[in-house]
Image 1 (tube, rainbow, N blue to C red):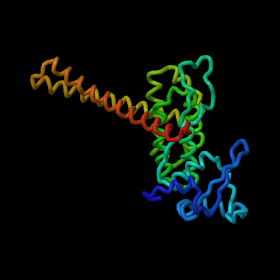
Image 2: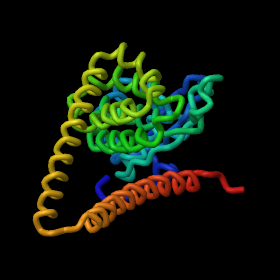
Image 3: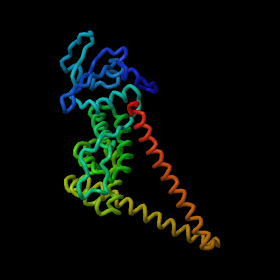
Image 4: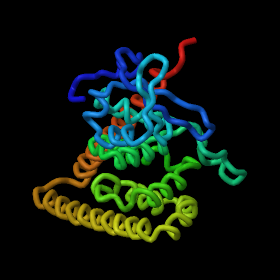
Length: 278
């Protein structure tokens, strides 16, 4: 809601004038105490769904309606409407490692959380959140390629989101991640093989990403040759060239490390933020 963070109103339920109720797969209801001026004015689709659903009045005099959404995913939508911010949460792995998967991880991951958040944001027409959740998913995908759930996430992504108009703009990085890892890891190829056979669009996207990567490598090679030729013409000695090249590589390593540290810091901070007090 602009730059004003009103998440405390959602968390406390203070001054709420409507209850939205969602039920999870186990039949457990989650009641969200919301404010119509915050939720309904920002998302017309939620307002319309609440109007279509049978509206009843509770013993406290507050109206309520049931919506057929997963409570966890719908909670992400509401937090965004109240705060204007999106933060992914890690969830338990959907399956355990098999006997031949000891090199993979089955730790909690945020892949499906962001995937389902962006799907619901698209359904509800909240496209700013769609963009942020997509960015979070792409970032997480780079760090969870060796997770047992990675192929399942890619499969679900292409099964449910590849028709989105915004897909190529915000989610094409996923195909690049698959391409980059497939080039250097045969086992990764085998893990993603079934998904690419199932989704020709995924196979095509990965192929295009591979061609783009090869073209970029060739351009960099040509540029390096030209720079080397220029340096030789200027009288650079070979050892000076290697020193300068190593400095460039060191800068690249530092930039990548800073990005990795920043991502890990955000994950740890969010985990600590949501950890219950002892």
